Image: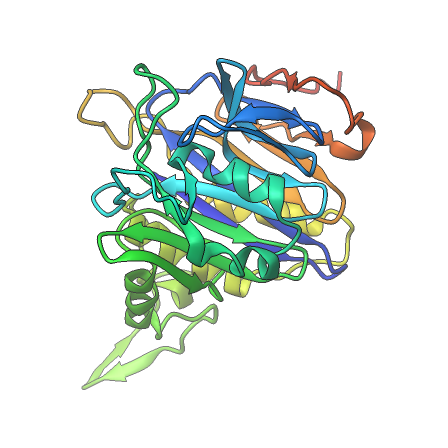
Amino acid sequence: MCTALTLSTKEGYHLFGRNMDLDDNFEQSVILVPRGFNYTNIATGEAVRTNYAILGMGTIMDKHPMFAEAFNEKGLACAGLNFEGYADWEEDLAGDKINIAPSDFILWIVSNFESLEQLRSVLADVWIVEKSLNEYTPIPTLHWIVTDKEGECLVIEKTEEGLRLFTNQVGVLTNSPTFDWHVTNLSRYLGLSTHQPKEIKWGEEQLKLLGVGAGAQGLPGDFLSTSRFVKAAFLRNNAALGNDEHSGIVEFFRILNNVAMVRGSVVTGKQKYDITQYTSCMCLEKGIYYYTTYNNLQINAIDMNKEDLDSSELKVFPYRDKLAIRYEN
């Protein structure tokens, strides 16, 4: 269970990131992939090279980077979110298509394209194949959200109906069901308002408000994918960004904190707790990846532009999951 978000600031910056909700970590770290890095296409076994430097959260297996979300030096970003019960992959390779394994899809997008416009032009030729890195690595069930420095946003879903693309003007993505269902479901909440309603008379009875915050009364608060989509969309649509340079980053984390999972609130079938392992925020113009973790609410930042983007090696940054407190005395 995860929630992804896009947000534009008053200064013209475009932010993108997500909550990673899982009942266990996946040995994740922030990874920098340099330009010209060689890796093997999981679907075909062919050797390929990255055209652009990439920064994001993921894991490395057999020297192969696999990202949960990432962005490149040109400002194109992508995240994969669980799409269980709907994702459907092809069994065999197609000779006339671009064969990609689900685990490689983010890496393929951010290593080859500068913008959504470029990506859209080739998606009709993409063939997502049911292949894994090795026998120990499960094949994920995902759909993807992609955005760029122009602020455009796209959702990519591969179901039994084929590869489907949705222009995402809501700026939010969660999990199952399909994106178009989530958008239709938003119409159930047209009456939500940020303003306090007036007291009214119902028959002979004068009805009084039960405290403040009544304008958003009816906003769902559980952790279902459908509920998180509505809540994140409402908060994003009504976010009042300040003029401070970091106001957008503050509001970005605040929105995702409102749909983050608390340990003990959801127990999985494995009798483990779903929690928000981390929350990420990428500034696509500045090339900075920000994140917090469940145990460490301090924002950590990694600036792509301070690294050697032409290095021949992957760089893995420490995952800062230990509580950090600044003592004032």
